[in-house]
Image (cartoon, rainbow, N blue to C red):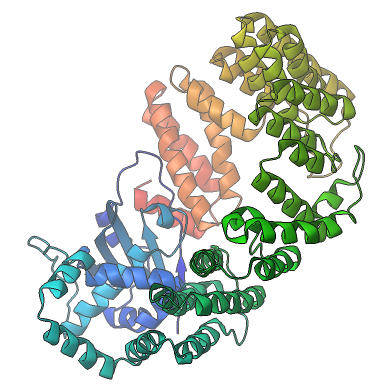
Length: 623
């Protein structure tokens, strides 16, 4: 089976939609018959390329009649798919490969999106109805019928006769194994004799079982199966079987935790399963009110030793269920572990703060302090780890939130003094804000100036401006900052050694140029770029601003970009090069005759004549 792939189609903001006629008449594509397209484009190939989740959504779009304007010409399919907006989609055969483009955000990012799937399935459905679609199938016309929504179905079923509805469901269950199993489990779970819980436990085990590693594309369907089993647990809670629900939730959580190591859960779908099970567990505990001491022991052991943050902060979340006896048991167990945790002073290895057991014990102790509303205890606990400036900041924030502003100021000043050589910008900004509130503006400005002076950056420039503007002193501070930044670049360039390899980037004035641009001083930014140099992204930003009044300045920058993308020898780079050439042509014809651009284009062609796909693209444009 031929492979499926996507090709990202670059478009400028505000660019025109897909040129459907140009796409349909690309003479440099190999002629391929409709039969070949039908052999390559199959539902199985679409599912395999898109993944279960995207395929399901695309199938829904196709079945809801969202695809319109389908046109085909040999190896090319074109159509419009209604989503949040109407999206233009193209499917075409390039030798033995399906190339797909869509102007939705996912398609622009290079993904095989649901709109592509919808077009492919809609064409397949129509091709099955038409024996000989011909070289160009007619575009579907007429108004699109109203889509039937889930609420429409719900309203219709609610109005049906009860007996007729039962007959409909039972008849469907006789043909649908999954529905029949679900209905059987619903009946069993409604019976409080224990049999229902056993069936649900087996349903959980079946849904969670992972025989081998689960690929990303298959996770969505897998998680849907688990949610189906959890639905049964929720049904049991509705019928008052809280004791069984507590046990089933804990059983399911253990099984899910073990399975997570064998799943590519890049989208965090399994996290939703864990959260749902924990929510059901808490709701069942609130109904049943199990022995608080026994419950505290189980929750503590899980929070301390678990790897997936299950029951994190349980002392706070379950405070009402645990009551005084349960919280006391939680605290007793936590303090035994807390006594084993050594303090970390400034200069200690920060990595030790996040060592699994220490991190979790600290979190438990903080939860207990928050549950008790004891700010002093919370500060004492957090003060056990002062290995980083950020640790001081967190304590200061707790103090300030509790209304202890003087204590917050003291902790922030301690943090700045403890780390004179490795300051944290967030801590300095926090302390500077406290100084401003006390009208200690000079101290605030000195605090934010020190890191900028040591290393002038655009971000530091913005921080400096924010603070200086509060006291109407920005012009003076801006001039000082600009002078300091320029002197830093000049000194660094004088001391710099020649680059030893391609990874050694030259010292340039990019940051200084960006500072001038932040102040809307394009002319000075341009002068500094010429004097001190800057990176290509900054040159492009300058070109964008400069081309308005000085197109001749911008043209060489865009020409360098054309050469850079052509060196990649990639089709997407060729597309970008053609777009840049269009832009260059527009600028050149503003100030010179058309022949000037054609001469430049001839030079480009001569330099890249061996790039056949690029040459074909230029031919298609008419250049």
